[in-house]
Image 1 (tube, rainbow, N blue to C red):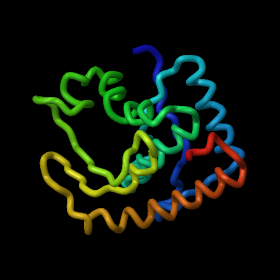
Image 2: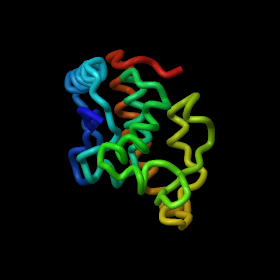
Image 3: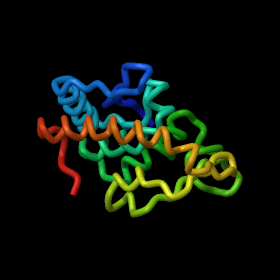
Image 4: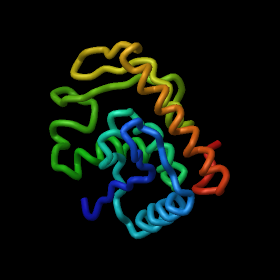
Length: 164
């Protein structure tokens, strides 16, 4: 697979889960992301920030990757099959196929047309069990607050490319 990178475009720095974003740092991260892609580095979606991951902000990370120049399909693959390939686990996970393990989501809308539709989940299934909406509601409110903060900074400083 070659060289891979998991860019941390946004970091949550406190236990309350509040996004703290410095526009200069975010601009640098976008420039770095774009430069690495141009150099042929395979970008994978993810985070090294456990709290960010637990808050379910992967859809927003994918939105940022699209703002950084990926197509929606490339962003989706960066969170599914490409990490499985990079870890040598693609025979077990990464795609929905008979004999593989997979968690699934159903969303309202088409993420290939608008990557932001990934934030509008209609169904979440993990290990064959449907996760009820009530279990996801608290995290969703904190994610929405953090996403608003970062989107405002992106718009205010004209970072990345717009998503129509």
